[in-house]
Length: 580
Image (cartoon, rainbow, N blue to C red; front, top):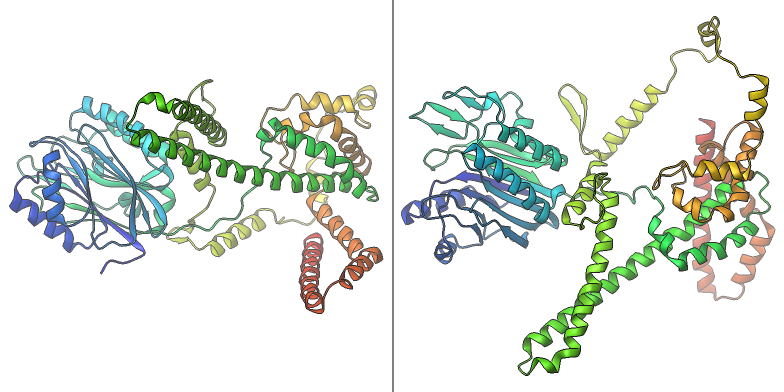
C-alpha cells in the first residue's frame, strides 16, 4: 500500500532493457520498492518498444528514446498511485531528457529524468540544452531533477581511478543548481557521508554520479534520501521520499500596480473620489494623520479595482480561448470549400493575435516581478520569467530555521517565535537610557557645523516645487515611503495630492517628527473611538433598525456586537503597542 502523503521516487541506470528477461526482472524489482515514480536511464528504447513495455509494466511510461544500443530515458508511474495525475509531458530528441508535470495530492510537481554524456564536450552541450529545456517546460519552483549526471560533484563522492578534480561541466551543473534554487539533497542530509552509486571493478573505481537535485525550500520535507543495492549491472538505486504539502501563505505585501496608470477609467475614478475623501476627513486636525487616512482610502479604491480588473481579464481570456476552440473545431470539421470559411478564418486570426497580445502583457508583468534587470528591450516573454517570479515568491517564505548546531525548527509558529526573539534581543539595549554613556562617547568629538547662512537656507517649510523636483530623482517602480504607492503614482496625481502631502510634511517639520506607526495606530484608534461615540452614527443606525423585521434586527445586533468587539480589539492592541 503506497503512503498517500509522501511521494517516493527511485532513480536507476539499468544499462539496457531490450532483453525481455532482464526487463521483467527490473520491472519486478521496481514494483517491490513500492514507489510512486521511477527514473530509468540507458533504457535503449525505441518507439516500437513502447506498446510492449507499457503492457508489461501495467501502467504509464513516458519515454525519450535513444537507439537499440545507447541512451534512452523513461519515467514509470506506479499503476496504483491514484493520487498522482499527469498534467503535461515533454522530451528531447536525443534520448537524454524526459519531463512530466504532475499533480500529487493537489501539489504541482515537475519531475525530470536525465542521462548525461560522459564526454566533456558533449556534457557542456547537454547542460546548455537542459537549461533551456527546463526554462521552457518545468515549474522551477517545484522541481525534482534526477538521473545519471556522469560527474561527481565533490572529492568525497569518488574513490579510486583518476583522482577527482573539478571540471567545467561540474561547474555548470552547480551553476544550474544555483540559478534554479536546487540542492543535492542527499549531500545536504548527509554532509560527510560516503555514498557511491556506480562501481567499475575493472577500473577499481567507485563514484556517486547518480543523484537528485530538488527545490531548496523542500529540504525539510524530505524523509528519505539514500542509495540502495539494486539488480542493475553496475549502478545502485537512488531513493527519495518527500512529503508533499502546500505552505499556507497570507495575502502578502501590497504594492501599487503601475499598469493601472494606463487605465483612464481608474485615473478618472481617483480624480473624482479624491475631493470626497478630503471632505470625509476635513475635521481631522493633525495634517499627518489626515494624509495617512487619505492614503488608506486610496488603497481602499485601488485594491478592489485591481482585483476586479484582473478577474474580468481572466474571464475574458477564458471566453477568448473558448471561442478559438469553437472556430478551430468548425474549420477542422468543414468538408466543403475553404471559401465558405472566409469569415471564420478571418475571425480566427484576429482572435489569435488578440490572445497573443494578452499573454505578451502577462509576460511583461512576469518580467517586472521576476526582478531581472538584464531583460533586453523587445525580448519576447517566455516561461522563464514566470518561473523566476514563482521562485522569488517561494524564496520569501522561511520554511526551515536553524537555531543551534544540530537543531532546526520547521513549524510556522516556532519560526515566527524565533524571529520575534531574535529581533527583541537585537534591539534591546544592554545599558541604561540616561544618555551618560553617549555623552561621554561624543564629549571630545569635533563635528562639522553648518554656517548660519546654510542653516537658514536648509531649514524651514518645504514648497511644492521642492517636492516636485525631489520626486524626479527617484527611480521608476520604487516606493518613496511605507505606503507602497510608487513614484509613477505620485507623478500621475501630483497636482491632486500635492496640497495634502505638503501639509503633512510641513506638519512633521513643525512637530519635529513624522507620524510613526506607533502614533499612527494610536491616532487611528482615537478616530475610531470618536466615530463609535458619535451620536449621529448611533441615531442613523437606530433609524435603519426601525425599518426592518425583528429577525433582521437580531441578525443586525449580532453583527454590531461582533464588529464592536473587533474595533475594541484593534484599539486594545494599539494601546498595548503604543505603551510598549
